[in-house]
Image (cartoon, rainbow over all chains, first blue to last red; front, side, top):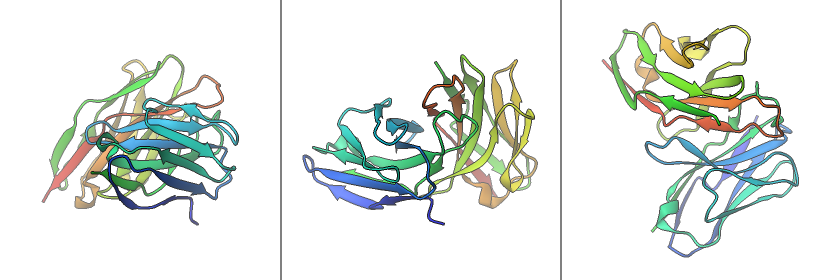
Length: 115
Length: 116
């Protein structure tokens, strides 16, 4: 009963380093999302993937890239980390983007600190 | 465009008293609305959702919310607060326009404190 799994759970990076956050879901969902959560700002959408093979920018895409590797996996890459990217990152999935009645299922989050 | 406003960033109640967390939304089309809860250092859990069926929606842990189209509101209530309700609550809107992806838009959150 894994649902949405994110790795790693915690990470500390130095400014300028790169890393990839991994996300996988085992619910056969079509759509996947990456959000960042900052105090007082709720969750803001970074990128999303409506279906395998497609990706689109969300509200705050600058400094990030994504890859929808297959239906299960959606990764988020920071090419050159900056302190402003210190945040908690959540991956989410939904059965199909067009089905508005369906809620999103979230991973447990990745707490990233850039020093 | 769609948006959601949570009117209080912090709410403090005493255990056993009612809870009211306020949410207003803006949407050009008929929306779906959700409330999520996040306990400290945890992920997000769905409390309840409105999907154009009954306007009064019951969720988990005794929470409920009423969709009021005329007021564009979706306030979350609970008759009697419990210590375990202390958490951050997010109101979320999803616009129904039949597109390939209907993104979830989050409010900025309301931190609920429950005093003994």
